[in-house]
Length: 102
Image 1: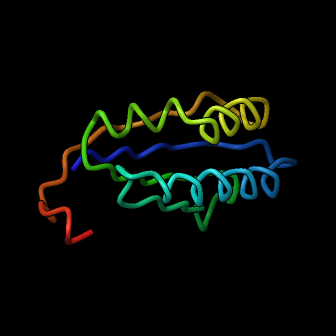
Image 2: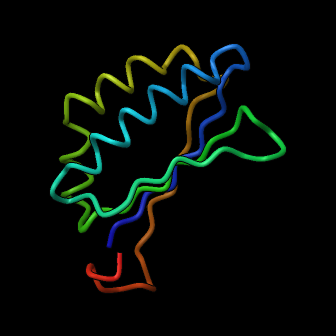
């Protein structure tokens, strides 16, 4: 599995809008054939900090996601709401290793 963990810091006055736009992106991403999981997490102690936890069956599946209409719309919509550029860590899943476990 190919896992992407994205950290986003949002300007305080755009938190609610960011949550709504990111939820739409996540819901559409879950319909993609290569996506296995998409969690949207908000830090408890810093409500302007989010982590997007995405799991795909392959790196190619993730790259296909980056070309979708809903991802490109999300990216354009939230760009001005970010307090700083988002960061990501790409990982391989050591456990679970089987697609059916997701």
